[in-house]
Length: 442
Ligand code: EPU
Image (cartoon, rainbow, N blue to C red; front, side):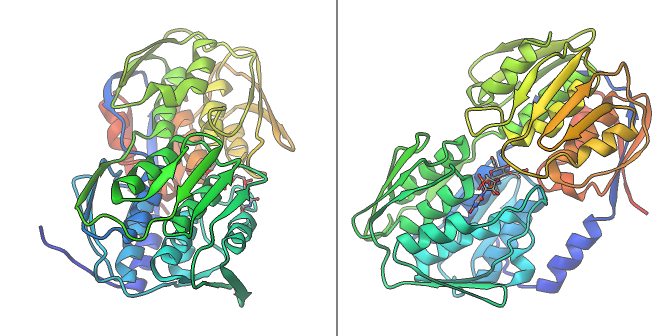
């Protein structure tokens, strides 16, 4: 395989702007039928790609979704000096020529997970510089205070000045860190920074998301010593160096992409088999949909869903940390229950500003009222297609589902938000019988 290593900052930004012009045109209503493979998880692939800079040898990461956030992460790896090849959902990273420990603001603002390069670069170089405004969807304030406070507890000096954060240390100190909230990103950053610590780092009230477990599996394959991933107490025993063998790792299936398919079938009706999924990661959404009239069967790596007639609302749903109902499925679920019978109440407890899809759904005829962190959905018989604007990734996916279930044509503008986290969404739903076109927006 040939490696390429282009470092074109302007090119990257231009590409992002170009994608911003996309719109999806959905001819509803769709009836979804067939089988579909679920892609690898964005929120596992991004930290794993970031962690690949620590490997002693080449790493081969498979089942990587072909999405914009992955491409941005690869651009950052290349900027740092890694050789990276991305082909057929497989990424090969050779970090032997990495030579930089600074992430410029143009890169940091591309996505929230750029913040994870802090932990990885601290482990690699004991130094890192990054913009203190990592990008990502604007779904809340999303501070990084817990990351910074944890770094300080690890003995890292942190300076903030002119929108830059500079961190350095001589060594990473073994310590016990209690997280006041089980932040996914802070847990990952502490793990990444602690691989070579003196003694042991213990994270209490760690996040338990499956994507963190996958990151730890990958790091342990590299030679790290991490125990307790998937529980509230994670222990990282410092190692002197990592293994020199080449490592191959397959990213876990994307539970949010799978959950989005389930919501789409719940909204539109008919029968779909999801392949290459881990049903155990989807307990909360499966519980909700089973209670709303969907027929569902699970086997080890498949989920069969059938929905006929109208979805039954009348539920109260609250977002929570894993294994609770995920905030990332709140918007897709909103679209499904917008056309259910009865009144459904959704409380968003993780992010302060994650109902931006609601005014767009209302344009389509939904009857939803938001009061602070609660959305009250009075289910309507049908939505009607119109022009709507995606404002964030999962909200964009929610509008996509609404377009599939609506009567007439829906134009989802600014579809670049959706492309950050869903691989070729229009092609995949077309395989299930939906009629969707992609065009440049106005
Ligand atoms: N928080 C703080 N201070 C911090 C860190 C977090 O106050 O230092 C707060 C956040 O503002 C938020 C809550 O803690 O209110 C939870 O944030 P968390 O750190 O857990 O989220 P994250 O790491 O920024 C990841 C996912 C999100 C997903 C959340 C929650 C990635 C790249 N992102 O974000 O995914 O919603 O966990 O599960 O893993 C998405 O995929 O669309 C997405 C937004």
